[in-house]
Image (cartoon, rainbow over all chains, first blue to last red; front, side, top):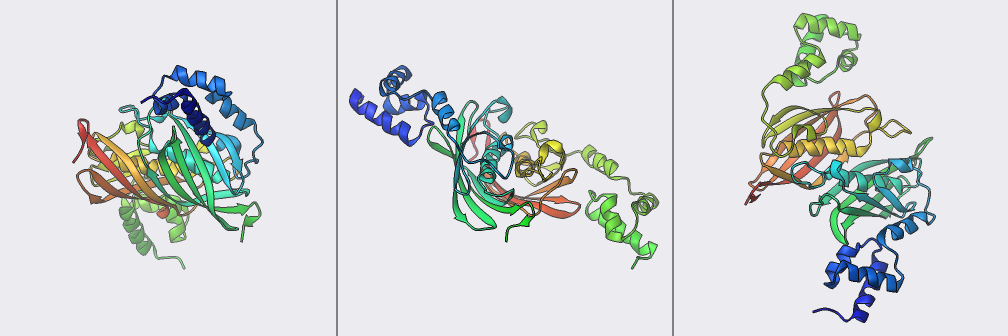
Length: 189
Length: 189
């Protein structure tokens, strides 16, 4: 059953505000309408397209990454709140998949999550001590992976960080990272 | 206290037979003698140098990797026994370390271990479902990481694989990988 337009636009507005990274394709699927309809809805509602939404987020001031060079983060950093949270986007390209089945190789998802976890640590030196990870579903060529990192246990010398990676709002990877930190003159006590 | 030569050569013979990847440097440190002495000892004992030992192992027939292309394994595969065990070597080069402190980035150690775990699976398709990993000590530029994978729980659709990565006999990384497998025509029941 198709929703009335008003109802659909309410849904769209809420969905994009909950998760600015949803694609028009995904939204069209959710509403059971064409991509073109979603585009028109977005225009009427004044919601910019995905690329613009991402650019806008990236232009917002976010904390300066301390523990590594920004270009050492695997994926594009969208938001960093030191010792608190971070978001990055990583698009699965040809060089990231198995030739045979075009499924993304696990270590790229790991690298995105791990480097984001290290990036949000407020210290000169941060090293992963251990991690427990789960590949929830295979990720395929062309999919955009959005990693959300969140500190859930913060101590002076050690942080525990939860990372969830989603494609179109669906969890594809989950990890808990235990990261140690130090200042240049030695390990934080 | 320096060991008598006979005693030292006995030690060297045993050490190289236990772990053919030990470097002369490491062996010299263990025996408290110069690298040159170790080289002479090896010649007397007929133990080839590290490069030759590795080449020899690599030339031995090992099982054909099925789940991915051999060049998709991160590191050089030295031995593969399908559904049983495997060994690979990965040398930490400039592109694998943090610019700031020359410590190897965690995802390369993960990639070596994970791809070896997948490589030893006897199936057309093998995907990591989950993993628990530990970075035991930082690995530095120039170090040679030798990963040893061992299946410890084998079911038709799923394997549990333990991977230990060592540098000069010292554990630097440890992981347990849960890998699912399928044949091309569907998941193994």
